[in-house]
Image (tube, rainbow, N blue to C red; front, top):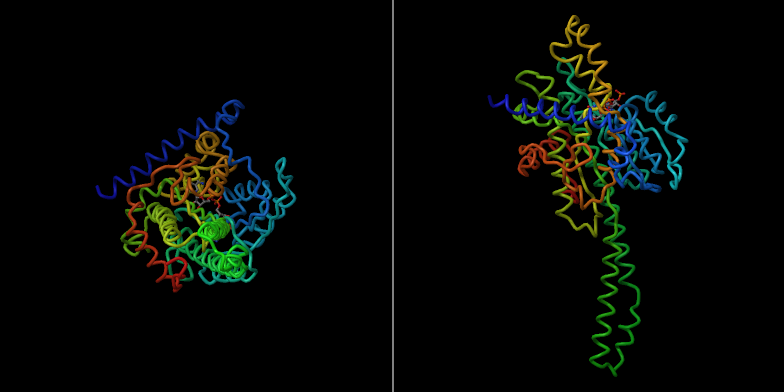
Length: 408
Ligand SMILES: NC(=O)c1ccc[n+]([C@@H]2O[C@H](COP(=O)([O-])OP(=O)(O)OC[C@H]3O[C@@H](n4cnc5c(N)ncnc54)[C@H](OP(=O)(O)O)[C@@H]3O)[C@@H](O)[C@H]2O)c1
């Protein structure tokens, strides 16, 4: 019974989501409805922004990278296959920009989330280049392989690819960004405080009056406020963690994260997806603990991007459980193939929600969970701060990385 409720909640949420998809897919063909649904975040240009999208050679990641590049962003496609990554970069390079935006830039960088060593090599290389990072989309994922797979690091593959490697990626990239911003803020502060203050030097005159004293201190407090405002305008990085409404079943596997007591493809996927919500919230708590005038306004959001017509989703319906049996597959696959365009979102439509998650003002989305393009409440299990600390400590232990002081 204990396991039944979370699994049923996930299945029921999926059913409601598919019904919503039917309306969305119909509305796409009605211009008036389409315009009514259009959000203003979709109309902004992103020139000068640097974005990394993991798993950007296919599905939602590819469509998201396209939306970012069309708006003028510099997009790093972090993909495990050099061939597929370069092909995607070729297709997305030279896209005509949206009206009013500059052309975007697209590059491929190799990243295999099955290997912690490979993740470290990626972050080292990016950090060494001294580049800024505006958006990190932790998108790559696998769903419910029929049999338990173990990575070279000895971990259940969905746990590592979907969650742990993305945690490491975010930790290493964000701590570097935060360190650099803190250095720059310190430099700004010391150069502005070493500038001679004309008012205060004139105020050293012996003919100092009470009025001139208060005038001078008003001036210097104005200067201090301007300094603070300049430092506080330090933009941060937006961290977008891909979750799924299947996260409602994630609590079932919480006590056995490596499926040591038996492997269930669905609940171990769900576990990785609830971990991503818990982690987005934990990152946000850590950002909020530190001075954003020093480290910048970093923000983290988790998102369920819809049930989307991609390899991952269609593979799940025909390769997991009873439908994986050859005779069932032969029966079910043709029916599903006919229904997908109605019941599943297009990757392009899902990428609009992704763009909102990546660019909406931090005040609106920081530390929140989005269901498609709107804010929502995740499963209560994901809201408990103690779980964030527990998962963070586990990630530290499994990766051997010490938490950076800027994220303590
Ligand atoms: N589709 C849905 O209905 C749905 C619903 C909720 C959440 N999501 C989430 O959305 C995200 C994207 O899924 P999708 O539907 O777009 O799936 P997809 O079309 O199968 O794309 C998955 C991407 O992840 C990459 N990837 C897989 N293993 C990797 C690894 N070890 N290292 C680096 N990249 C790896 C894949 O690369 P290769 O091409 O090399 O395999 C591919 O680029 C996933 O996190 C998924 O959990 C999807």
